[in-house]
Image (cartoon, rainbow over all chains, first blue to last red; front, side, top):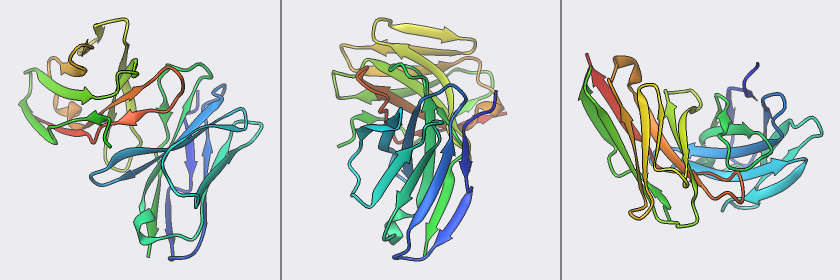
Length: 113
Length: 112
């Protein structure tokens, strides 16, 4: 069974630009969550999508948005990039039921210069 | 506000000995807890979980203990192996959703 796939693995963008990250969940998983990891901050929850609807949202500004397609693939978009957005962005997929473990992709390393 | 805390940033243990990683949480609504292991430049790998109806869950060398009254959980690794060297994150969620709150991680080094 294929794992969670995130593309691209690495990305360098300039301040003010926007970026789109992609995540393909494990086959059969309908819940996709996004996390931001920065040094010293651990993993911070961005949002969760289930059946193309945002089900949960963390405390991030509106510049961070996402969507989920009918095949459960998800994209995350960050507009008007800031230097502080440099981080490892991780996608996790879960079965529909709550209270089950999440499986993570390898992440996209975003560097804003 | 950090709802899940790992107060030890690092831990060193001799190979063959027990590694004990600790985690505290503040939100009494949390009822599902997980441990993840992470290597640099990779995503976290799920290790073991426990729901609040249990106080212990075991999987091979890994055992997680939950003390609900103290809002504390711990991961025991016995025996520790050099390949266990990684950063370990604990995470918690309320059964209302798949939003996980993570600690800041503990870097475990197992010395051969």
